[in-house]
Amino acid sequence: MSRKKGQTYTAEQKTKIVLEMLKEEMTTSQLATKYKITSQSLGKWKTQFLDNASLAFDLGGATKAYRDEIEELKTENDGLAKALGKATVKADFAVKKLKSLDLCNKKALIESKHNKLSISEQCEIFGISRSYYYYQPVQMSQENIKLLHKIDEIATDNSEYGYRFIYEQLKEDGYAVGRNRVLKYMGILGIQAIYPTKKKLTSIKNKEHKIYEYLLKKYWTRVGKRNTVYVPTPNKVWSGDITYIRINGGFMYLAAVIDWHSKAILSYKISNSMDATLATDVLEEALAKYPKPEIFNSDQGSQYTSHEHTQLLKKHDIQISMNGKARSIHNIVIERFFRTLKHGNIYINDYQTIRDLKEGVKAYIYKYNFKRFHSSLDYRKPMNVYLEYLKNVG
Image (cartoon, rainbow, N blue to C red; front, side, top):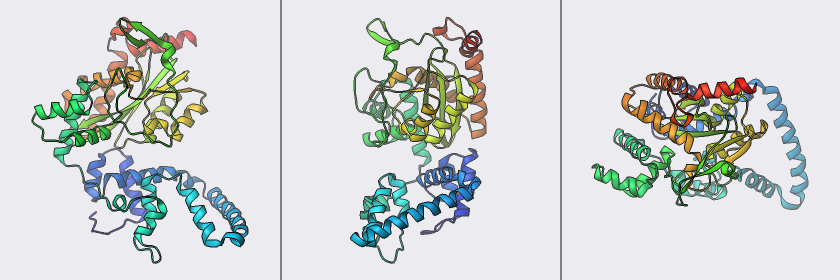
């Protein structure tokens, strides 16, 4: 499908592309290149598609809900119009609704060919800048993807490195790149340095989402001069996180849920987009297979502070815990697993296709869970420790 300048896609075309994206057979970059659209547009379409998917099975209910809402608004507008005028009522209503929208959705509401309002006026109404509306992200080249892979390697081997140290290492390795670009790419990767004291975060948070208190201090124990977390039994604490996984010519994201005590991987998923749906899907799978934990710990990324993820935890009466600012070490157990996975599987296999990547990761996680000795478990195997505990308490 070739896209000409200014061309728009129909709802049917968008649906076809999103369904192809959900098959997880191509990276987001590959799909963006194939259809000559931006990765950001693909992510926006996917979110809109999933948010409204339930309407396909409840058309009658949805229609009735909208009809009832319209009737309520009509009654309200009739009363307000007498004092304020119909135009004022519409403007106030729009402002209230817009407050809950993110920038991408606000941008999507702007009509380039509106016969009454200019783009500048619409930008002013929606509270976004004209430069943001006109900005078109550059598709990621193979050279930039190679740079992402290198940053991931450096960060995996040097968890304490911030963007300045990574920048210096890249320079030493012969890469011509600026500090700001390194910082930007660390955001794409979803990585940040692990510091013993507070430093600047590079992960992406949503300021409108609630940040929950870190609850694992009660499990802190002193080892030498440092605190470490010791959880005495399985199912006390689960942790979740998302990491960047490279393949030849692109990258994917891996989300996982780990039991803190046994180090067993309870669920995981590989996706071409890093969003709230990815984090929620993995948590739902773990809860469907195993008894719920007392506490679920994560970082402060928007995938974990989202309404969908926190509501799922509340629904199951699970306490929500989040790392302190710039304290990735609070979630160190899953960070260490990701490092083990990358060194023990991803880097040495250099996967060429998504299918090979998924099959390889599946085999490795099975080996990690059931066949690999873990020194912190007195050289027992993670899933054996976890399942033995469930058998004894069940």
